[in-house]
Structures are given as C-alpha cells and as structure tokens.
Length: 136
Image (cartoon, rainbow, N blue to C red; front, side, top):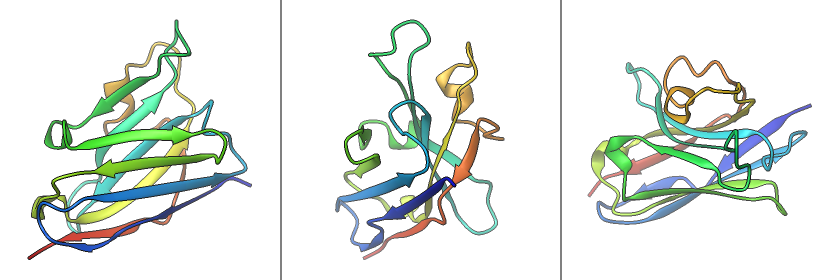
C-alpha cells in the first residue's frame, strides 16, 4: 500500500523559509515522478514543482517550477530515506495554501511541464497535505 505523508508546514512571517518533507512508503521515490502541489480554498490545485527521471539520461532528472516560485523554491529527494523535500525561501503571503506531495509514473515523452499541470493524471498517490500560512 502506497502512503505519502507531508510535514513541515506552519505559520511564518513573509520573507521566512520553510522546508516541507514528504515521506513515502510502498513506493520508491527514486524511480517515480514526484510532485508538490498547493491549493487554496475555492481555487484549482496548482502544480508548484515536479521532478522526474529524464527519458534519455536517467541520472539527470527533469525539474519543473511554477513561475511564481522560481528562484525561491527547490525540490529534491533523498533516496536513502525515501523522502522528497520542498525547500521554500522568501515566502510571500500568496504562498499560503495547503501543500500536497504526490507520486506517480511519468509516461514516456510527457514533458515535465505537462506532468506538473492539471489534471495531474500521472500522479496516483497523494498525501493528506500540510498547511503553510505566510502572514505578518
């Protein structure tokens, strides 16, 4: 049984940093695509960042960031601990949301950008989410 659990959310002031963790069981994050997503009540879920093995060069993962988080967020994974991280710097009030991690299989030839955009069909295992609130 696949299970993903996020942690690390909280209430922080603008300009602060947070690191979210996503620990997996029942699936290897080393081989699957990983995604971080966020959702605000009443809005569509947004793809924040995704990581997947390159089709040609598996040692060079493909990474996608939403424009709103580029240069501020960093996605990574730790195979030894089967955990993915989303390091977030210079947080802004508009980053306030519930953050979810997900895992799935990237279809050959699917671009990393498409993978990380709705409807996220490649992601079949989701965590319950962790709340991030950025407020002064």
